[in-house]
Length: 279
Image (cartoon, rainbow, N blue to C red; front, top):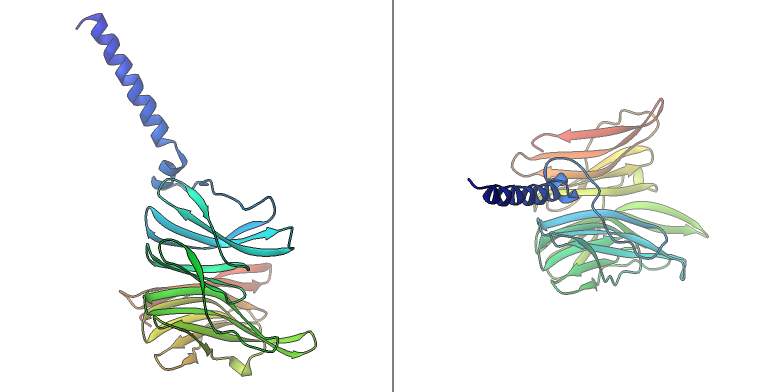
């Protein structure tokens, strides 16, 4: 082989190695290889930004929601970001409050909920606010999580805040259901009559088998939808001080439901994971 040919081979090899190195050591490639890395994401302004929920339609269609602080108004607004397979970008949001959860059914059917019960829908082109139940008289709903079984079977859960006196509130569990046309509010099952109850997570196995988890006056809380009503389900509370379940997920193939949160241990808050097998 001539020297000229060898030089051409070496030059091609060097080029391939450079390309391979650049590919293997990008953040996205590292993430795909099993390592966790930080992927660049946009922020709204220079004040507080946070993301609270994420849902994926596909590897190139992922949504994240949260909030940003607007110093001009002194309030938090809804933050929505989208992953197109290559980069995260901010998407215009009509929400005037913090977004707390998101669920995705299809590229043109994504839902997000907020801490003041605004419910948003993505139709493939724009996000819009969908009418949802709102209490009167100084009371309000706060939605913390959302999950979807189908386009006409979606659940959101949170807290119903009730004004009981000047500047004095009581807190009760609340759920909202989408039937394909309308959102309807249903009260949850409050132990001991409620007063300090919150739902933070929801997971669904089927239309008549939905689970919500949260906190009730120092104890972790589990509620179950059987197709007609929500009822309380007994669950472990290992701490004598304070336990709380913050999120849940369900595995329809096995019927298993998992919930995660914290317990107040002797040295401070400790992780808490509970499982219901074949629920």
